[in-house]
Image 1 (cartoon, rainbow, N blue to C red):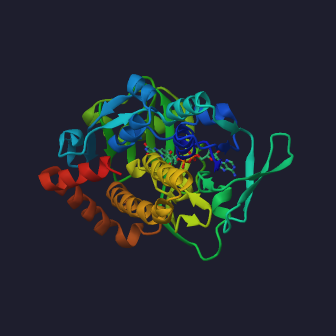
Image 2: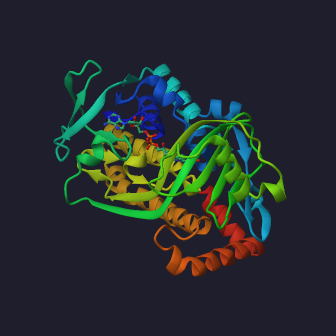
Length: 389
Ligand code: RFL
């Protein structure tokens, strides 16, 4: 088995295959240190933790992660806190930075005797429609090398080789929410004990704890303006303004150690299988980060795919592989739907729609927030979708 990509999807898959005695090799374009320090997700759903627990991969997350179950909405009408972790059967998130999870998964994979080639970029996938696919890759010294396998798992993200190998018949649904975020990583303790969602006429601002020393902030940003256009002081002042620090208390300021721009776009590849090539994680579907679903779906899909590969390779039962795409797509569309709902809740009218629809759009958002503040059944619905995958 050849696995492309050493993110959460590829490393969970590799660990599960090794545990079942199936030989595999991971090809990763980046360096080992890069994948172990790339700050991205942080909110892991209960189902993700259950999967990692079941396979003995959750030790670090239990030792160093924290349970989390509240978010706070801040609007012109005031603030309200939603203790989603205490509602219904949904459960809590675990806050554990993705780079720490990847480090743990890599450690387990190597301990189980797994093979991994860093600085090795998959270029093309060949003969995916047959029983002997292969991957053409560039080794660290620049040499091209062919990797042959029974199956190829494309866990190499949205710009990877797996997607490029799909034939024209595969449908690629794309949607642009029309919003851009400036994502910030601050060397500063969290400013509130909840995820903060600030809805402001100047645009959205978000607050998400990562560790006791590091906090993620987001600012809705004008598309096309570079990430370094504003000095740090101006960014903190804008965060204060949108998060209404004057009313609700100051933010803990600190050095901004990372800035990145994210267009809130999303896509779904359908189906997720082409012959012997299977897609999982961001390679299968990209979600806007508004609802923190991407890493959770990646782990879920890797678990489903591992089970299907194990059935096929150890028992000759291909039913799991045949049903893999449909099963995942059900989860993916549900996550896309909720992410789209969150995106519309949190943002002023997208660029270009400001004049025509802004009053209407803002009134709809106020109404949605009011419903979430006052309706217990709406809160239950929110909790179930926010925490679930
Ligand atoms: P990854 O993690 O991108 O890993 C793919 C790996 O493939 C490698 N690669 C290649 N290797 C070989 N050959 C090639 N041709 C290759 N092309 C690429 C890459 O170097 C990389 O190592 O994909 P994976 O495993 O599918 O995991 C997906 C998650 O990383 C992603 O969905 C999440 O980070 C999304 N996300 C969040 N998800 C959550 O569940 N909860 C969150 O709180 C959350 N916050 C976020 C996020 C994503 C963010 N960004 C990056 C927009 C916050 C942010 C800011």
